[in-house]
Image (tube, rainbow, N blue to C red; front, side, top):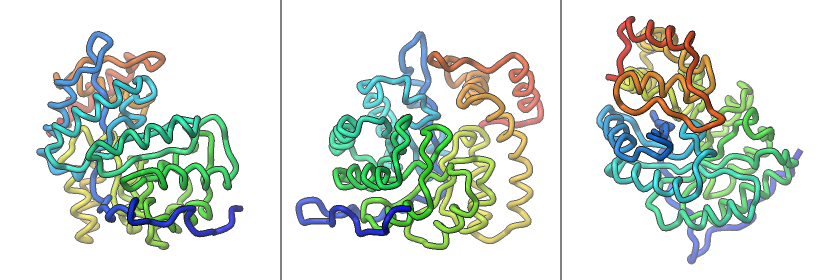
Length: 309
C-alpha cells in the first residue's frame, strides 16, 4: 500500500496548475475511421460534427475505441488535429499510453502545443509496476503536462491494478483532476465519488446509470456514437433527479449497449456506423470485423428502430 504523500511537484509561476475543467456529462470515445488502410479524415470530421450537434460534452481522441495502438505517432497527431477542427470549440481530450516512461513523457510534452482540454493517461501496460511505481508514473507525467490529466483505470487492458489508496494519493496532485473508471470495483468507484477530488466518469457503458446515480460526473462512452440524443437525455434526467423517466430511457438503451460490446470494441460499433453510411467497415489487424452472427443481431437492432439520431 503506498504512502499518501504530497504531489512530487507543486505548481510554480513557470508551470502553474491548469484551471479545473468540468469533466462531466457525455464524452464520446471516438472511433477512428479507415479507408483502404489509411485514416479517413473526412469521415472522422463528419462524425465529430454530427455528434457535436447532438449535445455531447466533449470528445476523446485516440483512446482504445479509436484503435490508437494501431496508429503511429504521426497518425495520432493527425487524428487529433481533425477532431479539434471539427469539434469547433467543444473540449477534446487526447489519449496517451505506453510503457516506456521517457517516450510517453515526450508525447505529453509534444501535446503542449495543441489546445486539448486534457490527457487521458493509462497505467503502463505489460510492466505491472508496484503501487509506488504507479504513483511515480502518473505524477511524473502530470508534472510535465500543461493540461489536466484524467487517469484511465482499465486493468483488463494494462494488467495493472490501481488501488483506491493510490488513486486518492494521486487526487492530491493539482493536475490530476478526473478518472475514466473501468476498474471493475464498485467500492472503489463509490470511494472516489465520496472523496470528491476526482471527477469520476465511467468508461464502462453498462455502468452509466449506476455511476451517475451514485453521484458520478459522467461517462466516456463508445456506444453513445449511436442513439446519442437518448444518452444525452439520460444524463439530463439523472442530473435532474428524475429516476423514473431515466429508468425508462436506460431500459431502451440497454439492448444496444449489450450488442455493442458482444465482440471486441469497436468492431460492432463500426459495423453499425458503416451500415449508416458514416464510414467504411474497416479495422486494423489484429482487430477483426464483427462476425456474421453479430451482424444479424445488429441488423435486428436497426429493425427495432434504433438509429444514430
